[in-house]
Length: 281
Image 1: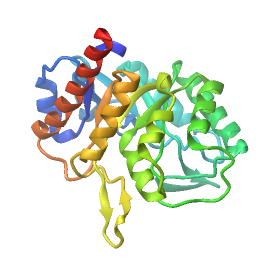
Image 2: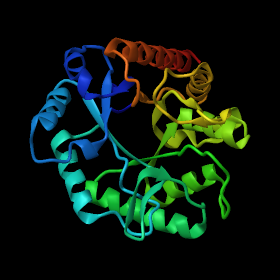
Image 3: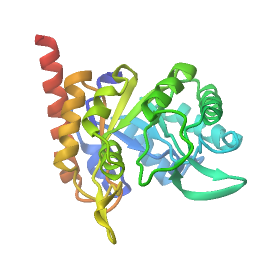
């Protein structure tokens, strides 16, 4: 595991002080780089202070790797400058698009997994990795409805993308659970089939039922504690794949730092158990 990372927490501005003071072994923090791609100022100063004591991961949300054009060159330059400044332990992005025909949409949107899309995304991943001088990890998305035009199974698509570009994979286990419930497939089977050796990072988060449709449509809301079913999938993954750096995400209804750290400690305990089991096997 890079830099002895165990379990980490998404860093929020209201948690800078307790995060800076935390001394938990193996703790790391993840941020969206778009919030820090500036020349200076207090927010960047805080991130540098955190980085002086803890490992930091950059988790991008706006490269639009599945979009119809290559990533914006100026954006990549700013991202690369931040990476040189922070020296992140991990860098990741989403398998999604947010810009098309010059229009920007503030969301991570799905696409038909065609061979043409594979070529386009592989080229964009390669451009990103060339700009950063390092491999990035690509996150599996949440799915809310079936779309037409798929030529590839999702896992096969991600595996092929990694083979073509040398990228790693970020396994978001809450996304797997939400998608499985919404589309009607087995989350356990999906986890078992995923190419474990390519996973460099795992995400855990909470979800919510759609306010109109209820439990028939789950939303990857990141505004609730991690569900028991998602914890079970995490244990299933680490029992099979071994420990991976695991992040606790919370973007809405953000609780006290201590509450997030309690979930973080649960994840760390599961990673330690898997490591112990592997060592004694």
